[in-house]
Image 1 (tube, rainbow, N blue to C red):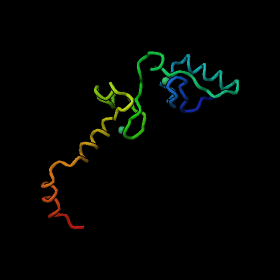
Image 2: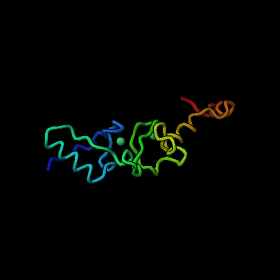
Image 3: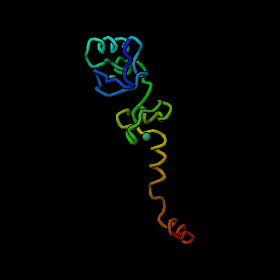
Image 4: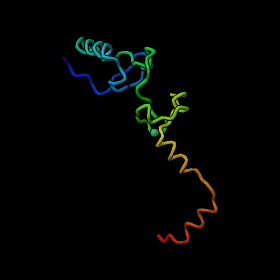
Length: 109
Ligand SMILES: [Zn+2]
Ligand SMILES: [Zn+2]
C-alpha cells in the first residue's frame, strides 16, 4: 500500500486537510487513486455531511481541534479563530491609553 501524504485535498471544498478529516473508506479511495497514478484526492468528512474534526483558524492558518474554537466561532467555520488567536486579539486591543503611561515609568530600555 502506498503511504498517503500527511494531508490530502478534498475534491469538494478544495482544501488540503489532514487524514483524520477523511473516513477510512475515503482514504482507501485516495490510496487507490494514488496507485493508479492520480493525485490522491477524495471528499472530507464535513463535505459528506459528517461532523467536522478540525477547523482551520482564520487567524493563524493552523488546523486545530474543534475544542480550540468556541461555539460561536464554529458557527462561522470560514472565518473562525482559535481560542489563542482570540485571546491574542483581546490582549492587543488598546484597553485604556492612560494605563500605558503608568507602565512606562518604571521600564527603562
Ligand atoms: Zn471538503
Ligand atoms: Zn489561531
